[in-house]
Length: 346
Image 1 (cartoon, rainbow, N blue to C red):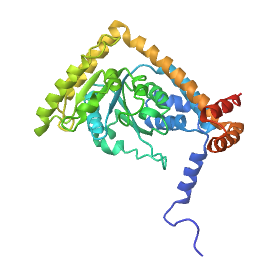
Image 2 (image 1 turned 180 degrees about the vertical axis):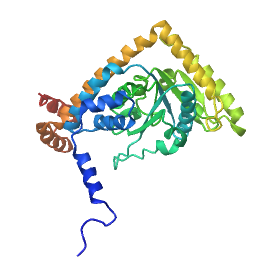
Image 3 (image 1 turned 90 degrees about the vertical axis):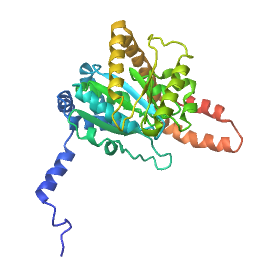
Image 4 (image 1 turned 60 degrees about the vertical axis):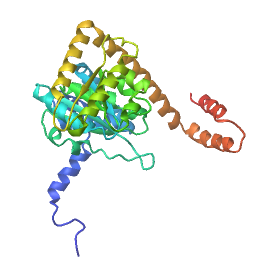
């Protein structure tokens, strides 16, 4: 009679693995390891933060509180652009340059989630082959879930944990130009928009919201036969940026050319970023903007907590189904039904 366990598995090793998985996570131990730059502990903490399990959330809050005194020491750069613009290639090129400049880099890449299966590819590590194996880089893909604008709900907490782990520069890559790019803009110190030339993308770029938020527009893939088109696009975007009201920071948004594939223009972009941060810190705007970020994410956290509390309420879950029937049979309207359901939130 054959045993239930495959012959090639060492039973002692298997027992140790099971015991290790069952071992209760210790918040103080994880905090200590995170602050010492342990990437395994950092990944585990971000997983806890992203988990919806109540036990995980309690542990995550302890870890966040313990890491808080060690956070807020990085520069945060949001990077967005339409699919196919070369975000991953650009991030790898700029990231390698950042590391060569003596910095530690964390990349929080937000992948879109399927509205059908709720799954996500999370393939950024495979697209950043050099960066993913660099010991000074940490790449963490996360699923956007049902969040608008391509930003995972827990990205703000992940930023804090990365800062506590000693990362000097943090890139937040969004899924693209979504419905609410204000989310990534509100959690970063610099907002970089990647664009293409010669693909009809110039017209899409003249969308007031995304253009107004950008601190720099980078025309990627400016190489080969596309160089002239890229130069024309750069000039068009530069003229468009001058039509918008000046930024509160006093910064005049820039337009740059680069070929991330050929590593051309990358050094100039990093020099611009350093000049921006030096200017904003000396003027006091950098600190003021961080305060605005904190206010935004306080309100956002309250909204998320109220949303979870609403849908987790058993009375509301039961009443919601009844209200849906009433709406579908013409007995009430969605607005009136919502008001009735909100009365149950006590």
